[in-house]
Image (cartoon, rainbow, N blue to C red; front, side, top):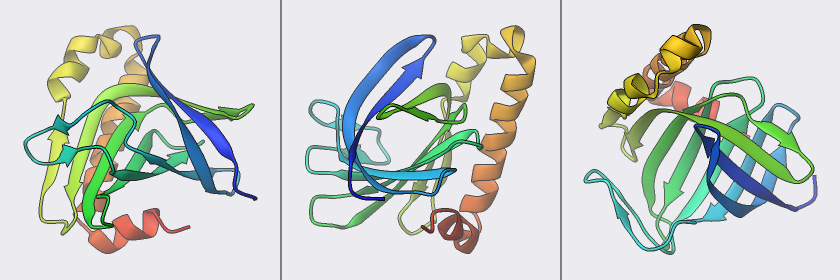
Length: 162
């Protein structure tokens, strides 16, 4: 596939949370990889990592999996780690990639030593389990799968191979 631009749209609770342009790296019909600069304004300090202007995100989306994985590098090319979002499978059409964020996240440090489950309280508060119990169960399974893969670094890097 030739280099092309797509718009990434992250949807949460029925609203578009953020949208930004990205360049397609590859797309095999199931696994889409794009690259984009840090899209939010300013610096976002999570305590365990800082996202800041100049950072580059290589983002992996799947049309058949309930997660997305974003490899984060600093402006100088130093790997910061991977931010993983539990989402519904990506919908890719008409130059747009739409993913529905289901609140659960995972952070994996560049050396693989730190694996953090994030936002489980937000997930519980979202009410997804009451409204859509099957989707909530799939989201929890996906977070468990990502964590298991992250704790086996070879499996995690194989997941991201293009």
